Amino acid sequence: MDLSVVIPTLNEAVALPALLADLKVQRDVSVQVIVADGASSDATTDCATRAGAAVVIAPRGRGAQMNSGARAARAATLLFLHADSRLEHPRHLREALDAIAACKDERVAGHWPLRFARTQPGNDLFYRYMEEKTALNRDGTINGDQGLLVSAKYFRELGGFDERLPFLEDQRIAAKVFASGRWLTLPGVLTTSARRFETEGPRRRYTLMSLIMGLHAAGADEYFARAREVYAAHDASGALRLGPHLALVRRVLREAGWRRACEIVLRAGRYTRQNSWQPFFWCDVALRLGNRPWLRWHDRLFAPLTNNVVCDAITAALIALWFLLLLPVAAVIADPRD
Image 1 (cartoon, rainbow, N blue to C red):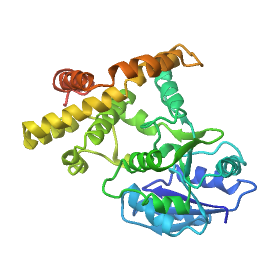
Image 2: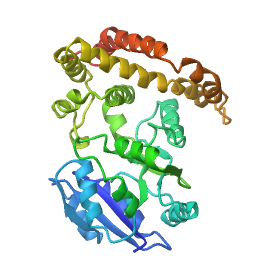
Image 3: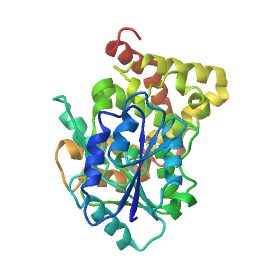
């Protein structure tokens, strides 16, 4: 086997067959397909079996499922894909393997830029920004939708996926790659479904993602220990209500005490200041500036000037204002039930 492909699934009988068909027509590569299922209640495992994939039943949770699938892999190289991914052409995987081999680096991991498959019109700039951001190879821009191509040896060195949470396993392993090796943008693009953005609302979904990433960077483990109370799996998601998430964060900060709460907010401010490049990049994308002058201006001038504790504190104060005053109002406008 040249490659073992691990696909975590939970009630993916609709999306999975298309990806399995894409994998079956790949040329010049020998592929083992492993579907790591988290006890689906639909026909997911039947679809996988009919397509000739190996099925591994694993504890529910994407990290645990992918680790279980990796343990069943026979190839020296692993590829982790989501069930709603689509490959571009029959040499998609061969070209990716060749790109990794050309690096001649044992500590390298590959990912693809994304293209969103949409069923609803509108929000063109939003999706274009999201797509172009996935090709940047910046910390915080690489996630599980983009695939993970890595040698089995390096995957073991990374310690596999974090199984403690039902989400963020992709961000945590991405950070480990940044710390110990390097990321490679693979040739071509990977298509992924926009279903979660379309179901939950793109702006509300992006707001929640930003909130979660800020809390993760702040080390707010108290929130994540209780996140299952309010965070819905993809198969149970609907129009996103931000109110329950905001209420949980307020409760966590209140119970943590003022010293711990201030520490979390300050760390979140530092994380936000470190991501100040995103509005600049948005300008480049909106104006279709391929040479990224706004992003380059940020990296050369703005970032060095703001890389200090004073700017961290100012950003933290702005975050507190946003969270306490502006975000609750926006949440109520988006959904009066909040």
